[in-house]
Every structure is written in structure tokens, then in C-alpha cells.
Length: 103
Image (tube, rainbow, N blue to C red; front, side):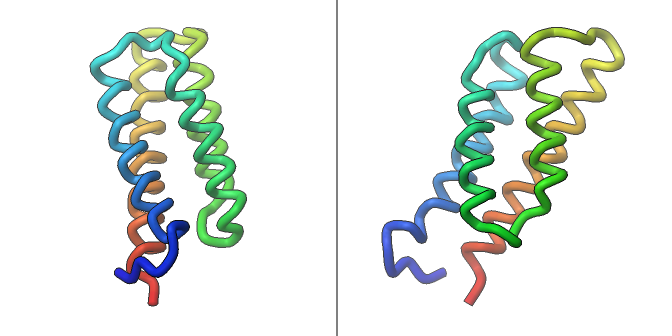
């Protein structure tokens, strides 16, 4: 890991925010708006690092967050959306870690 500029810390910040949202999804109420703000920051981050992330995975996570936020689903479908969102969060963490360890 080489931190030469302040922008090199942004993937590390995104890892921290992603872990916070993962924890908040299982401890807080579903109708909170903080995960949507996180996804706004995540989309800006992904679009600024064009080619490093698959945009489809990120936008699938945004769709799952919107379905969870506005409670269109319940029961088994809610668990499916939570699982898919969890997988997207893992993808973001791995992608940010790869950005940090790139030479």
C-alpha cells in the first residue's frame, strides 16, 4: 500500500463506509435514509474510477437498497434483497482492497 496523496485514502474510506452500512442494515430499521446517501457516494466513487468496478453490480445494489428502503417486499423476498445487497457490499470491499494493493 502506497499513500502518496489524499485521494489514495478514498478506497479505505469506502471500505469503512461499506462495513458501516453492512452493520446498519442488520441492526437499524430498514426505513432509514443513510444507506441511500452511502449509495450516492458509492456511485460517484465508482464512476470516478471507471473500469475498476462492474457498474451492473453497483446498480443492482442501489435497486436492492431502494426496495428495502421503501418496503415494497416482505418475508422471503426481503431476505433475498438483503442477501444480494450483502453480496454487492462484499464486491465493493474486495474491489476497494484491490485498488489499494495495486502497484
